[in-house]
Image 1 (cartoon, rainbow, N blue to C red):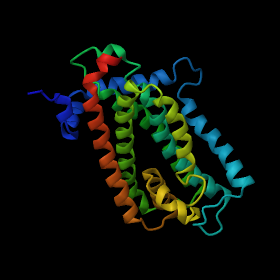
Image 2 (spheres, rainbow, N blue to C red; image 1 turned 180 degrees about the horizontal axis):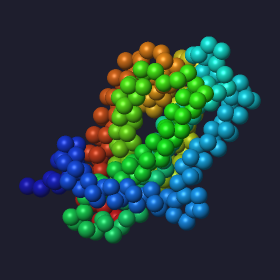
Image 3 (cartoon, helix red, strand yellow; image 1 turned 120 degrees about the horizontal axis):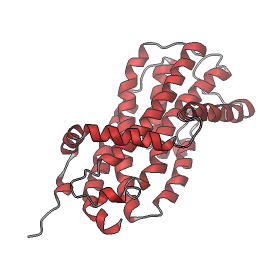
Length: 277
């Protein structure tokens, strides 16, 4: 009888035990990914702050000033209110975009570790998410400062934020595992992800309110978990409006399924990495 690879039977519970056991290795690879991103740069980590601010200025000018964009939730919504909503959405989008654009090379870029039987390859995508999360937290801190200085202040809705961000991180993990495995066998995946990340930018209600989505497209765009995460974050942090529990439940369910499915695919395909890389 054919023996089933151990990796194909491993679940998220077993994976969690692996990550805890190799937490020091995970930390080292996360720090390495952050360092590699800024290697050779004179400004280093300062670009993590400067890049989102430059994009914020560009998008605010185009969509807020030229096109007169408004989210239409706050009374007398100002350009600063629009900019804060835009910045929060961009911060969350950039976390997922970084995973979409970089995860396909996670295994291909580390061929030496693939040949080592005892090395836990599933740690590499997690480290990539850790590096993306590091940059996300910096931009989120900037967003908090903007809310405190120019917005309506932080209310009790902030306590919903962990329940909104945790699913976002799980989705990022699921994508990182799935794309890292897929990228080994289908090298064109990286080019496809460049297009999909751009499409996701405009399909996540970052520049416009969900109320402006046509009914004919609502069923399709509402299947995007990121659009729910961004809307929920804006409700809790910026607009101080009640949380949509149906949207939160969909986000949680999508995150759990996405993380499970991504890890399952990675562990199923993992035994074949050495034959391809």
